Amino acid sequence: MRVLVTGSAGLIGSEAVEYFDEIGMEVVGVDNNMRADFFGPRGDTTWNRDRLLARCERYSHHDLDIRDRAAVDQLVAHVRPDLVVHAAAQPSHDLAASRPFDDFDVNAGGTLALLEACRQHVPDAVFVFVSTNKVYGDNPNRLPIVELDTRYDFAPDADVAGLTSEGITEELSMDGATHSVFGASKVAADVMVQEYGKYFGLRTGVFRGGCLTGPHHSGVELHGFLSYLVAQAVDEGPYTMIGYKGKQVRDQIHSRDVISAFWAFAQDPRPGEAYNLGGGRANAASNLECVEMIAERCGRRPQLSFDDTPRVGDHICYYTDMSKFRADYPGWVQEHDLGRIVDEMVDAALARRA
Image (cartoon, rainbow, N blue to C red; front, side, top):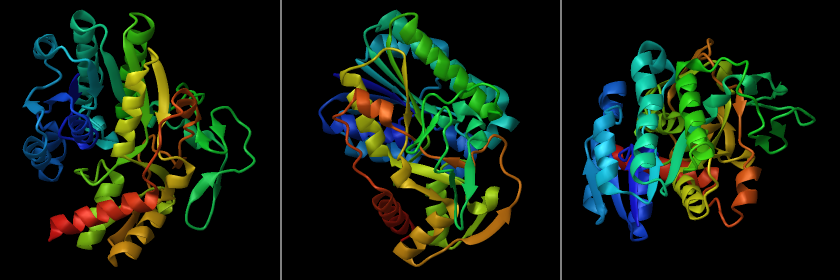
């Protein structure tokens, strides 16, 4: 079996490369290190590309821009993958506002180029798309929310569409919301991936991730919250809590659990289906709570400051109800709890610092 992974030097892409290499598949990666262009030297993923090339016996790498339709078409025609994991993206709210054409061309245009190449050359391939919970815009902020000492949370007695006691479901509307420019480009890609499944019959699946994280994340201030926070804590460097007094809540899911979910879908795909993907209520914590967890593990803290103005479209509280995916794929097991995730990331940050 042959797997094509876009964004292969990023967090999710590199985890996919390792996962499928380990189970004996040929893996072809696409990554032109545009993250370094987007975020500067700290976002550079060359180290991760080189790590994969040294570690993974069945991995080959292509320095290709997914905005190049002809190049994408030629690569898919040549590789003829059985499975595509499309993780390449411009992932930042803030950067999208200053570079809207780059954002849309990568997120929406690149996705369409890859979908059409698959339709033309490998229509039976499984196509997994890494979407985002930002497709819901700021609609999560309209859900009943309460403020507690160290976090915001959903009101325990809330009875509204799109929310259960376990978190946010796929029933939450995308409409009537402020999405951010980034969120809008991902909506376009998300819907197009669904449509290639529903309209053309391709075996596509959409996964709306929240905070996907792990020790191989090149976290920066504009993207990769937990990775960047861990790095700044270990270095005892500056960290700004942007909006909501640092009480905003996210659920963390380890990149390995993300890829195992993709593999579960790939073995029994449901064309055009969309799933929320996150760590769930048990893996949810606020920014302030994460600082304390990191300090407990390494005795270090960042130099905190606070900016009262939240990012446009940012969520006050978000954690994921995975019931739909678990019902469709009952064999999938989430192996990493929040404590284990933080331990791994602290260990990795300390090793890089040393």
